[in-house]
Length: 166
Image (tube, rainbow, N blue to C red; front, side, top):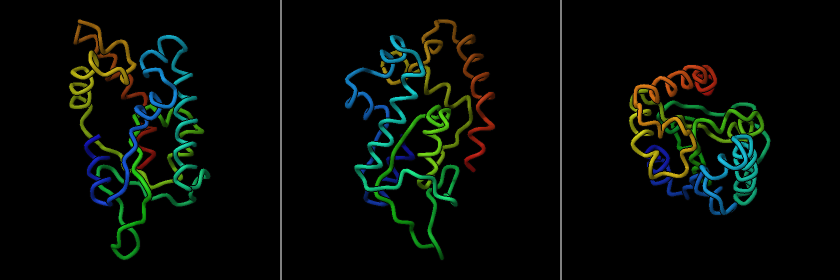
């Protein structure tokens, strides 16, 4: 969220937290949604909410043939000029697991906050008990080593997908 907040401030544009938007529009927390309906329901809500936000912003919902992708740095436009943005939409790493949501993400300029997996795990496990937007039940496991092993396995499985956004 820190990278998204910094980009929002830098460009003076609104910041949308996709999980917060889903919760506000749907009425259920992310964790409750996944517990009661499964992760597929979350993927559906991510797509639905991304589409709604983009439409509200007047943004295209078809992929740009040449999106500007970056890892940790806001992209620049031609000749070093700042690219025009209408908003920053902060979404979790698993949003791009759904091909339709991945296409929506690719319609804009993509910034990936790239941190070491251990750093991301430590933050996630610290936030999990109080953050109902974190839906991975294994992060609530009192056996931190088991939780870390599951997190790292998931990260390594998804890493090629994340890397495809470079």
